[in-house]
Image (cartoon, rainbow, N blue to C red; front, side, top):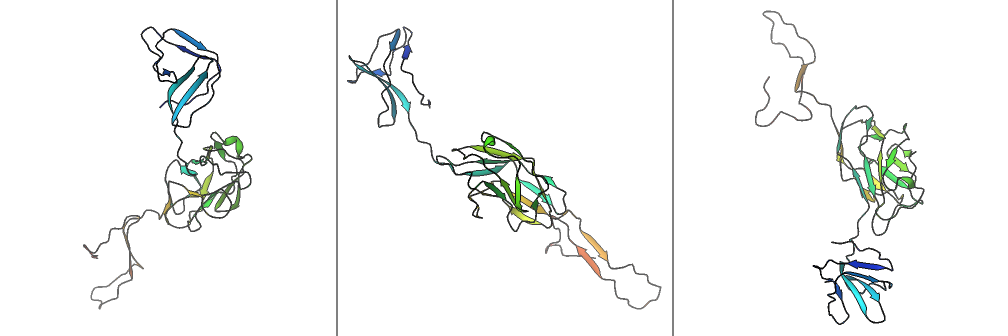
Length: 260
Protein backbone atom coordinates (compact mmCIF):
# COMPACT_ATOMS: atom_id res chain seq x y z
CA UNK A 1 0.00 0.00 0.00
CA UNK A 2 1.51 3.41 -0.91
CA UNK A 3 2.39 5.71 1.92
CA UNK A 4 0.71 9.12 2.02
CA UNK A 5 3.25 11.89 1.45
CA UNK A 6 3.35 15.66 1.73
CA UNK A 7 3.10 17.43 -1.61
CA UNK A 8 4.72 20.73 -2.53
CA UNK A 9 2.80 23.64 -4.06
CA UNK A 10 4.27 22.79 -7.42
CA UNK A 11 2.95 19.41 -8.60
CA UNK A 12 4.48 17.95 -11.73
CA UNK A 13 3.14 14.90 -13.57
CA UNK A 14 5.08 13.40 -16.46
CA UNK A 15 3.62 10.82 -18.84
CA UNK A 16 4.95 8.98 -21.84
CA UNK A 17 2.87 8.88 -25.04
CA UNK A 18 1.73 5.35 -24.14
CA UNK A 19 0.38 6.25 -20.68
CA UNK A 20 -2.86 7.82 -19.60
CA UNK A 21 -3.20 10.02 -16.55
CA UNK A 22 -5.84 7.56 -15.39
CA UNK A 23 -6.02 8.94 -11.85
CA UNK A 24 -6.71 12.49 -12.94
CA UNK A 25 -10.41 13.25 -13.10
CA UNK A 26 -12.56 16.32 -13.38
CA UNK A 27 -15.23 16.93 -10.74
CA UNK A 28 -17.81 15.69 -13.25
CA UNK A 29 -15.95 12.37 -13.61
CA UNK A 30 -14.48 12.98 -17.08
CA UNK A 31 -10.90 11.71 -17.49
CA UNK A 32 -8.01 13.80 -18.68
CA UNK A 33 -6.34 11.89 -21.50
CA UNK A 34 -3.82 14.50 -22.61
CA UNK A 35 -0.20 13.39 -22.63
CA UNK A 36 3.19 14.89 -22.02
CA UNK A 37 4.35 17.23 -19.27
CA UNK A 38 1.77 18.98 -17.15
CA UNK A 39 2.65 21.46 -14.40
CA UNK A 40 0.14 22.92 -11.96
CA UNK A 41 1.29 25.73 -9.71
CA UNK A 42 -1.64 25.58 -7.32
CA UNK A 43 -1.78 24.67 -3.66
CA UNK A 44 -2.97 21.37 -2.22
CA UNK A 45 -6.23 22.21 -0.46
CA UNK A 46 -6.92 19.15 1.67
CA UNK A 47 -8.04 15.57 2.18
CA UNK A 48 -11.66 14.56 1.96
CA UNK A 49 -13.60 12.79 4.70
CA UNK A 50 -13.46 9.32 3.15
CA UNK A 51 -10.79 6.69 2.98
CA UNK A 52 -9.27 8.00 -0.25
CA UNK A 53 -6.41 10.47 -0.12
CA UNK A 54 -7.20 13.09 -2.78
CA UNK A 55 -4.73 15.79 -3.73
CA UNK A 56 -6.86 18.69 -4.92
CA UNK A 57 -5.32 21.31 -7.19
CA UNK A 58 -7.42 24.45 -7.59
CA UNK A 59 -7.55 26.49 -10.75
CA UNK A 60 -9.97 29.10 -11.98
CA UNK A 61 -11.01 26.93 -14.89
CA UNK A 62 -11.19 23.51 -13.31
CA UNK A 63 -10.33 21.33 -10.28
CA UNK A 64 -8.04 18.36 -10.57
CA UNK A 65 -7.87 15.45 -8.13
CA UNK A 66 -5.09 12.85 -7.87
CA UNK A 67 -6.69 9.77 -6.38
CA UNK A 68 -5.30 6.43 -5.26
CA UNK A 69 -3.79 6.63 -1.78
CA UNK A 70 -5.81 4.84 0.90
CA UNK A 71 -5.60 6.23 4.40
CA UNK A 72 -5.63 3.56 7.10
CA UNK A 73 -5.55 4.18 10.84
CA UNK A 74 -2.87 2.25 12.71
CA UNK A 75 -4.13 -0.13 15.39
CA UNK A 76 -3.08 0.85 18.93
CA UNK A 77 -0.06 -1.03 20.27
CA UNK A 78 0.75 -1.69 23.91
CA UNK A 79 3.91 -1.02 25.85
CA UNK A 80 6.18 -4.07 25.45
CA UNK A 81 9.35 -5.58 26.88
CA UNK A 82 11.20 -8.40 25.15
CA UNK A 83 14.50 -10.08 25.97
CA UNK A 84 16.52 -11.48 23.10
CA UNK A 85 16.22 -15.04 24.47
CA UNK A 86 14.97 -17.17 27.35
CA UNK A 87 17.56 -17.61 30.11
CA UNK A 88 18.08 -20.69 32.28
CA UNK A 89 20.44 -20.57 35.25
CA UNK A 90 21.67 -23.20 37.70
CA UNK A 91 21.75 -22.90 41.48
CA UNK A 92 25.17 -21.56 42.47
CA UNK A 93 26.00 -20.05 39.06
CA UNK A 94 28.40 -17.09 39.04
CA UNK A 95 27.26 -13.63 37.90
CA UNK A 96 25.64 -14.05 34.49
CA UNK A 97 25.07 -11.39 31.80
CA UNK A 98 21.47 -10.51 31.05
CA UNK A 99 19.98 -11.24 27.65
CA UNK A 100 19.54 -7.91 25.84
CA UNK A 101 16.19 -6.35 26.78
CA UNK A 102 14.17 -4.22 24.33
CA UNK A 103 11.53 -1.83 25.63
CA UNK A 104 9.08 -0.24 23.16
CA UNK A 105 6.60 2.43 24.23
CA UNK A 106 2.91 2.30 23.37
CA UNK A 107 1.18 3.90 20.38
CA UNK A 108 -0.56 6.20 19.70
CA UNK A 109 -0.14 7.44 23.28
CA UNK A 110 3.33 7.06 24.82
CA UNK A 111 3.57 6.26 28.54
CA UNK A 112 7.24 6.48 29.58
CA UNK A 113 7.95 9.82 31.25
CA UNK A 114 10.57 11.72 33.22
CA UNK A 115 8.20 11.70 36.18
CA UNK A 116 8.23 7.95 36.70
CA UNK A 117 11.33 6.59 34.90
CA UNK A 118 11.69 2.89 33.99
CA UNK A 119 11.95 -0.02 36.42
CA UNK A 120 12.68 -3.63 35.49
CA UNK A 121 11.89 -6.00 38.34
CA UNK A 122 12.77 -9.59 39.09
CA UNK A 123 9.65 -11.26 40.57
CA UNK A 124 9.77 -11.23 44.36
CA UNK A 125 9.68 -15.03 44.67
CA UNK A 126 12.31 -15.68 42.02
CA UNK A 127 15.62 -16.72 43.61
CA UNK A 128 18.09 -14.35 41.98
CA UNK A 129 19.08 -10.67 42.14
CA UNK A 130 20.53 -7.91 40.01
CA UNK A 131 24.29 -7.50 40.30
CA UNK A 132 24.08 -4.13 42.04
CA UNK A 133 27.87 -3.66 41.96
CA UNK A 134 27.72 -2.74 38.24
CA UNK A 135 25.65 0.37 37.39
CA UNK A 136 27.03 0.83 33.86
CA UNK A 137 24.45 -0.34 31.35
CA UNK A 138 24.80 -0.32 27.57
CA UNK A 139 21.68 1.38 26.19
CA UNK A 140 21.04 1.72 22.47
CA UNK A 141 18.00 2.26 20.25
CA UNK A 142 16.21 5.28 18.89
CA UNK A 143 15.31 6.68 22.32
CA UNK A 144 18.68 5.96 23.98
CA UNK A 145 19.33 9.70 24.22
CA UNK A 146 16.27 10.07 26.45
CA UNK A 147 17.65 7.94 29.31
CA UNK A 148 20.83 7.71 31.39
CA UNK A 149 23.06 4.68 30.89
CA UNK A 150 24.27 4.88 34.48
CA UNK A 151 21.54 2.97 36.28
CA UNK A 152 20.71 2.41 39.94
CA UNK A 153 19.16 -0.31 42.09
CA UNK A 154 16.56 0.75 44.69
CA UNK A 155 16.75 -2.85 45.92
CA UNK A 156 18.33 -6.11 44.78
CA UNK A 157 15.25 -7.01 42.71
CA UNK A 158 14.80 -3.67 40.93
CA UNK A 159 16.74 -1.97 38.12
CA UNK A 160 16.00 1.77 37.77
CA UNK A 161 16.69 3.58 34.48
CA UNK A 162 16.33 7.35 34.74
CA UNK A 163 14.35 9.02 31.94
CA UNK A 164 15.54 12.50 30.96
CA UNK A 165 13.00 13.20 28.20
CA UNK A 166 9.47 11.91 27.71
CA UNK A 167 9.17 9.12 25.15
CA UNK A 168 7.12 9.44 21.98
CA UNK A 169 4.89 6.70 20.61
CA UNK A 170 6.90 3.59 19.63
CA UNK A 171 10.16 5.00 21.03
CA UNK A 172 12.50 2.10 21.78
CA UNK A 173 15.58 1.33 23.86
CA UNK A 174 17.67 -1.82 24.27
CA UNK A 175 19.43 -2.56 27.56
CA UNK A 176 22.48 -4.81 27.96
CA UNK A 177 25.80 -4.89 29.81
CA UNK A 178 24.27 -5.77 33.19
CA UNK A 179 24.22 -9.05 35.14
CA UNK A 180 22.14 -11.27 37.40
CA UNK A 181 23.57 -12.90 40.51
CA UNK A 182 22.73 -14.90 43.69
CA UNK A 183 21.06 -17.95 42.16
CA UNK A 184 20.22 -19.31 45.58
CA UNK A 185 17.58 -21.98 44.85
CA UNK A 186 15.65 -23.50 42.00
CA UNK A 187 12.85 -21.34 40.58
CA UNK A 188 10.20 -22.27 38.02
CA UNK A 189 10.05 -20.33 34.75
CA UNK A 190 8.90 -16.74 35.27
CA UNK A 191 9.14 -13.32 33.58
CA UNK A 192 10.84 -10.01 34.24
CA UNK A 193 8.39 -7.18 34.95
CA UNK A 194 8.33 -3.63 33.54
CA UNK A 195 6.99 -0.80 35.72
CA UNK A 196 6.79 2.65 34.11
CA UNK A 197 4.55 4.45 36.61
CA UNK A 198 6.31 3.43 39.86
CA UNK A 199 3.24 1.87 41.41
CA UNK A 200 4.83 -1.49 42.19
CA UNK A 201 2.80 -3.40 39.60
CA UNK A 202 3.83 -4.65 36.18
CA UNK A 203 2.76 -2.54 33.20
CA UNK A 204 4.25 -5.16 30.88
CA UNK A 205 6.02 -8.49 31.30
CA UNK A 206 8.92 -9.91 29.32
CA UNK A 207 7.79 -12.25 26.56
CA UNK A 208 10.83 -14.46 27.33
CA UNK A 209 11.38 -16.48 30.51
CA UNK A 210 13.92 -16.80 33.28
CA UNK A 211 14.38 -20.09 35.16
CA UNK A 212 16.75 -21.55 37.77
CA UNK A 213 17.37 -25.30 37.83
CA UNK A 214 19.10 -27.52 40.39
CA UNK A 215 22.60 -28.71 39.50
CA UNK A 216 22.71 -31.79 37.30
CA UNK A 217 23.24 -35.02 39.29
CA UNK A 218 23.24 -38.71 38.46
CA UNK A 219 21.17 -41.32 40.25
CA UNK A 220 23.08 -42.10 43.45
CA UNK A 221 23.12 -44.66 46.27
CA UNK A 222 25.18 -44.20 49.42
CA UNK A 223 25.41 -46.04 52.76
CA UNK A 224 26.06 -44.12 55.94
CA UNK A 225 29.30 -45.97 56.52
CA UNK A 226 31.50 -48.88 55.49
CA UNK A 227 30.58 -52.24 57.05
CA UNK A 228 32.92 -55.16 57.82
CA UNK A 229 31.59 -58.60 58.70
CA UNK A 230 33.24 -61.85 59.84
CA UNK A 231 32.47 -65.39 58.74
CA UNK A 232 29.79 -66.78 60.97
CA UNK A 233 28.50 -63.40 62.24
CA UNK A 234 24.85 -63.34 63.30
CA UNK A 235 22.32 -61.25 61.39
CA UNK A 236 23.62 -57.67 61.35
CA UNK A 237 21.71 -54.42 60.71
CA UNK A 238 22.60 -52.57 57.56
CA UNK A 239 24.08 -49.13 57.60
CA UNK A 240 21.35 -46.75 56.47
CA UNK A 241 21.22 -46.39 52.70
CA UNK A 242 20.34 -43.13 50.92
CA UNK A 243 19.09 -43.21 47.34
CA UNK A 244 18.99 -39.90 45.46
CA UNK A 245 17.29 -39.68 42.09
CA UNK A 246 18.86 -37.88 39.13
CA UNK A 247 18.44 -34.16 38.43
CA UNK A 248 17.05 -32.40 36.55
CA UNK A 249 15.42 -35.49 34.99
CA UNK A 250 14.33 -38.13 37.56
CA UNK A 251 14.53 -41.82 36.66
CA UNK A 252 12.76 -43.76 39.46
CA UNK A 253 9.25 -44.76 38.41
CA UNK A 254 6.28 -46.81 39.57
CA UNK A 255 6.75 -49.07 36.58
CA UNK A 256 10.23 -50.31 37.50
CA UNK A 257 10.43 -49.78 41.27
CA UNK A 258 13.79 -49.97 43.11
CA UNK A 259 16.03 -52.97 43.51
CA UNK A 260 19.22 -53.05 45.63
